[in-house]
Length: 84
Image (cartoon, rainbow, N blue to C red):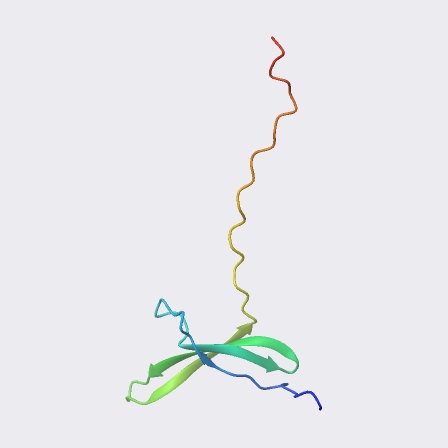
């Protein structure tokens, strides 16, 4: 079986994690000339009342790494039992 060629194609999925109006209504992967990118879409209405999708393409979205647990401060190499 030959592998599917997804060059210059993509998909949009409903953004179930939308929390703010500025976040896209839909998002998904898109391949542009062999480069994996991210496609975002917002549902909008024109001044004349016609519905449309506003699109934005950008670098592939990577979730932010969760904050690393804080490490204990380094131990002093000094012996606190020295009386001076």
